[in-house]
Length: 286
Length: 350
Image (cartoon, rainbow over all chains, first blue to last red; front, side, top):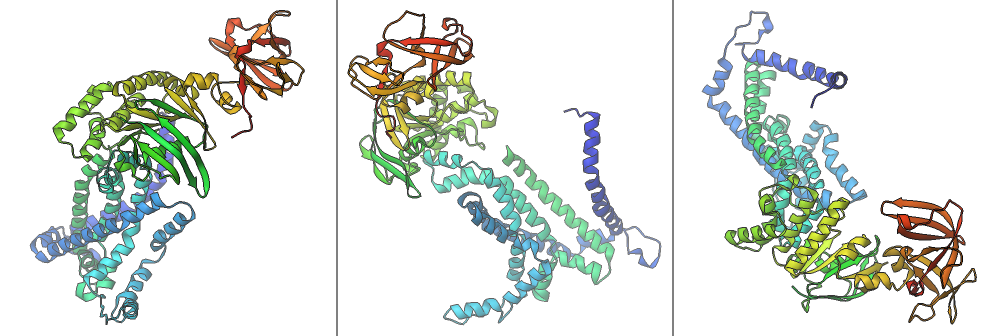
């Protein structure tokens, strides 16, 4: 499609504020970090920059980093799978089973985590999960036997906190794709003799796949690099992940070049993961 | 293939009856049109027969078996939806084969039957296409093929042609009828398009306000409507009401309309616009009224005069060249044959 000159001017005028902002806010700092990652040490003392690949080499040489990256990817997968398993039925109910005021009310509850400060959200989980915390006392009051539940500073605590934070993404993206799914498709499948399992597997899931995958990507990417939830809910015992190690480089060890190098390795791995899902997305769209 | 019977069928939504006391027999192999305005309950009736809804009262029998409690998955009905509802993630052949796959038919058998039915609907070459690559008429054929490939006992069509443009609709009407005849399947379809119902159906049923007003072959219902609603809904009708007398119906202007042969005294008479003729002064016999021209409608081959008779609208339709040239406001005398009068029951009924 050929664009008239006027259209081009108009388009440029409309998108340039956003892209200028993105350039300033994302591209420039990111470039600075990329530059840092190739220095042997941060030039804070005014010394001349020395270029080196040693920090990328460090990732390859030290199994600790590779192990942590793998652990973080696993965490990302676990959280993503739980979010999809929990979020899909919820999105189904919101899209197909309820209408009107109730839908609005339930939507509000889904979006609520977005509106609370992330630190508050995470610390409120800490109150719930710790030994002799609200959850344990509540269960003790209901159940006849003595419950000893100390989830705090454990892997499950990190997973719970992350699922809570990222579940809305999956619900919202899946909701949108289910909303676009015509009810008469399901009726047609039923009239052809299909049971619910078949309908779910052959009609609903393939057609909702773009939404589910988009939601999964929105969850997986930030979870792999997450810092806050592992730090606070995982603590010393279970809170060391790839993201927290990067943060340490910047805030504790002051080895900015190593932190930057580890960040870019993460970015590369995440992009590779996205590249793997891209064909699935394209297929689902046809 | 089977006869379908509904007996005393009723359905309520939120405590309000949307369908009351419907009793109908759809003969084996018959093409039956359910016709009615929106809200008449025709779609509800179709969905009850399909099994998407369960009735609150009455029975549904397919081939003599009561099925009103059997859900749609196990009722062995084929259904074509208004928007076709083709699965966009599957090819034409996969769409058509879906019902067979679900039933555990072998792949070879599936392929053979899909090819056979695609041949029947004249889409033999398009099996690999995706629904979004098809035209409206082709989608319609795929939907039809998908609904009949499992050899259901009944075929149900929900406004099957309403999404097509007019010329394609006429073509698909002929196709639909051919395919239905070839397969010989009992077919029930819902439409609000009277012409479609008259063209396709062996018999039609007119629904209004959740009740069956009249049923019968299209000719009979068109020429012998029972009440003013049916007369006006199925084609156009000029209605004349008055006092029944021995010789005929005495209109408010004092003129007398003779009873058509075999009709008893009724309070209302309908005359189709195509049966009214303009009379020269002194010409004609029997029934006549004098009306004033409001305006004239040109529709190609035919034309319509819209006239005013004592505050009531009267229409006359004829070949354009047979209509008299009149200017607006001019008076004209209209007449019609005695037997062109259609006696109607109480118009307020139903």
